[in-house]
Length: 440
Ligand SMILES: Cc1ncc(COP(=O)(O)O)c(C=O)c1O
Image (cartoon, rainbow, N blue to C red; front, side):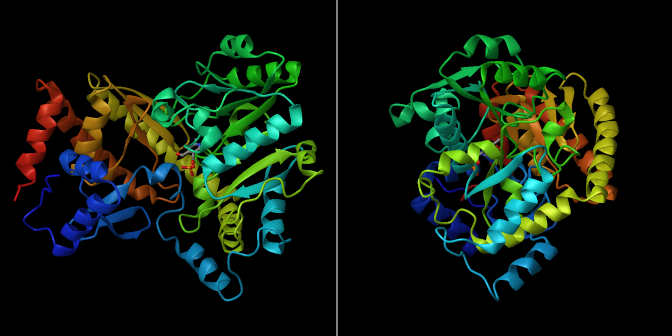
């Protein structure tokens, strides 16, 4: 593989890239270098993350899909973690735990109705897998319906609920999964039968391009599920914890699911933890054998302490008011940006700070990601709809920084538009990269 090196690049960075390429992923290293985004993560704080060489500092408008909702290295959370280490470690996943019980009680308090039991995990995929296991065990049926273009993770069952392209190289997929178009009630109605255990949907599918559903969609799906005694699972891995201006995005749609999957931001960006929160009757699936599902690191005690504080912060009315204030300022400024780049930037999708910029065509998302990077913004196009660039700023960002973000975005859009007009976009990105990153 050819390693591009910038003349100012340190030996430490060059070695990190070489080692990454030799021992982690040669094709990722090649991709990022060719794409001109060869950042190796270094110092990070609040909304910023820098290159290991400190030559570049990005404003994080992606936040790993919500992992950094509360910013990088949130001081309050670091203090909780540090203090926790005086008394706690991972704990024992077989035994009872006070901090795990405290966190599960807090989740129950913050959920509607009788959604009051939690099984903790380490990744979103694991939490989704568990939701499917519970649905199948409870209903004694097998079929799971999900949305085409949605995303629930890359573990076994979650993978089976996702798009073909992520599973086709890996052999036979788990049976019993059906995908339907999102925001199409009739498609759900038609796909359900007497063997259907559950419907899973992201409240707003992020990887599909921040596709905000019509007002009645989720309620209609709820009605179908009620009529046919099918469980409704809402994946709030990206939309939960205040991202949309309410603690849970499903609150916008007046719908109460049977299970909620939470991940990413629950970690505070510091300690991996995810949760499958379910209605009380569903917990019965563990009555006969409470050890039928275990996760060694799921609900690690030290992670529970951090997650408890994350929930306290995210549920506070003043925190949600801050998110909504940011959201309305973004809405206003994005609309004027859209007007001035109307041939390239077609529409804004938004609920709270869950935002997507809809661009002219599928080449535009990757181009804008690159030109935004040049202007110190980290924003990433939606993998399942590259026309859309996701815009997911930290929920704690200072409102006075919005003007700067918009100004940089303005420049990035203008540059992307220019780049787009050149013939053969792929070749031209490579030329562009070579122009600014001298090869050795
Ligand atoms: C909506 C949604 N669900 C589930 C997952 C899977 O989470 P993880 O990568 O932690 O397994 C993701 C990850 O991006 C996600 O966006």
